[in-house]
Length: 330
Ligand code: BTN
Image (cartoon, rainbow, N blue to C red; front, side):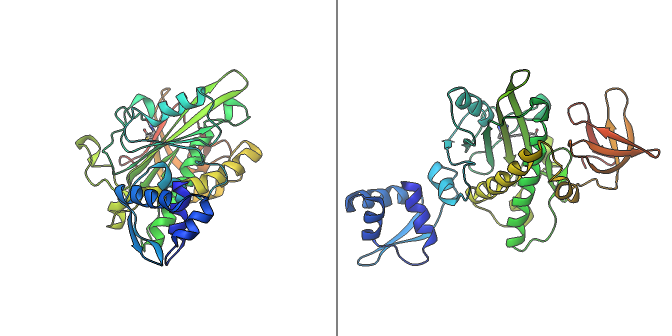
């Protein structure tokens, strides 16, 4: 109910009367007062005026369940939301929740991760209260061989969401995708995605799609300081993380549905390719069978990077290789 009260206060520019809250949620005046008091304790600034009611003046930057749910405009994605002030890894928590029977679209979100996981066995650092660490539980009925493409779907959805937010705040510069799924702004990494799967030979049990977005952080550990950035650094002002989360989930729900129709990226290739940072540029493909360079020409409907080498088009599968620009990270 707290999230519904918050949603109502958010929608109303003026005051919402105590009477309306009581009637709408079928609770006593004391219960309403207690909830408003709780919200104030959590950092929400709420003006209370006799005979007029309550007015939401300002909202803290929280990623708690009521804050996220009150921002969310999705049908099912994130509607079951589990918040951790601190946890090892939201991907690990999603796996646990999945084993316990949590529904499709469940979101695990943390303010701080003590053992964040990155791709290729690397870690993912975090500082409390600054960035987004979240994972989605998906239970698609499809061939496990197609699951890795969902990482690209999430990359595209996150790019759409972050781009729209930057544009709304007056920043025109494009957010790009470094294949397969890093988001970059001015050549620096803004976001990373890690998908983990539990499957049998022919059926997926569940997927954990984890995404880390640098939102308000401005100082990074020395080993990544040169190649990392955040939305706040792009904009020159902080953002509320719950709004970014809600926007990412909004786009992901749509892109996920498009993906499921064909179980491939054919409906998303165009939008993805437009954002590709290395498009028409020279890249270095770090293939274990031998590195080579070529020109990136886009992706195909399987999410493979198309690299033109000596007039021949090679299809690069993300699982096997990494791709870099010839001059460094992008
Ligand atoms: C990468 O290496 O680029 C992928 C990083 C993925 C990090 C996110 S943060 C939320 C989720 N939980 C994790 O432990 N990892 C992912």
